[in-house]
Amino acid sequence: MSQPDKRALLAEGLAAGDDDAALHVRLTGAGISVAAAKYEIDRLAKDPMAAMLRRQTARMAKQDWLLANQQRLAFEAEGGFALDTLDRPAPDLFYRHHYAANRPAKLTGIIDHWPALQRWSLDHFAAVAGNKAVEAQVERERDPDYELAKDDYRRLIRFAELIDWLRKDEPSNDVYLTAYNSGTNAAALGVLWDDLAPIDLLDAKSARDGFFWLGPRGTLTPWHHDLTNNLLMQVIGRKRVRMAPPWAFARMRNSRHCFSDWGNEPLPAGEGDGVTPPVLEAIVGPGEGIFLPVGWWHQVEALDLSASMSFTSFRKPNAHVEDYRSWGAL
Image (cartoon, rainbow, N blue to C red; front, top):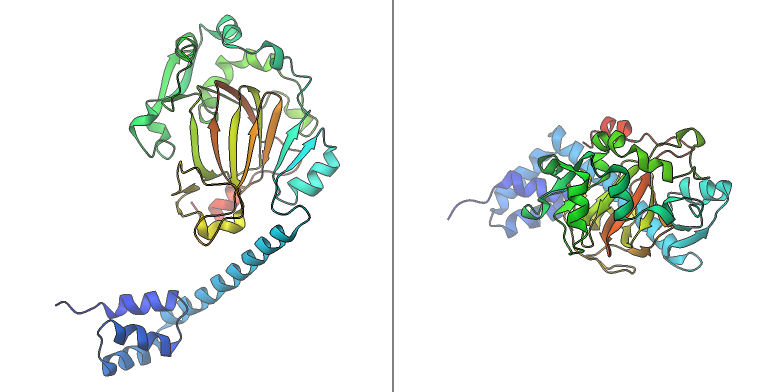
């Protein structure tokens, strides 16, 4: 029988916050002799790496306490843990109580003036841009990590070809034109921006900004968090948006970049438990949207043939990517 790895046991114990007595129990419980356990623990007093790990574990415990208090306050708020719906919100109210507070909201009435709400359809897309070459995510269903490996599924196709495929109205997660394809599609589909108009909540200087999304019912963006604040506005069809707060980080199973190992799991709406996070859920239809604050986990599912726009051009600073890199999070 092989000897247990004493250093690995010690590292696990230190990361768990064990004091010397608990470390001794951990070692002897794994089959280490009492004398050997005492020797290893005595050595830790002179080990700077052990001291640093203990300090880091204490910091993490403090952070966990702070996050637990944020959850308690959210649950105790008037109305409980719930998603606000704001109809034509005044910008000052939105920025103070939602943007600055890192609090999501469902939004209505803010794009009622868009011609797109009457004009957009597959026929309209074909008429104004059907001859254009566009980039889309194609053959996503062959890879469970399609979102993480999205560069592998970028394909150039004729917009008319995508539109003809969408006319079948078959559920699929295989083909999706997403914001990630906007670098290629901004010029090709620029005519669609003629059907939009400025949104009062956004920077008026950025009227031609925004990212176009088009896909069949069944497209699914797995659980992840963005590195910016985002506004998602629905034009055609409906989407279900599930959201989990940043303070539920420990239950979001984040092991890679900004993605959650929950993936496509339809986590239930509610306050969660010791394993699953608290989840807010909303369905947005034509003319409705969701404000998704930076750091909020979310999953988005198309319930119908869907065309959407998303925006990051808020009136306040929204460049959090460099901060993310400077913290060594990438």
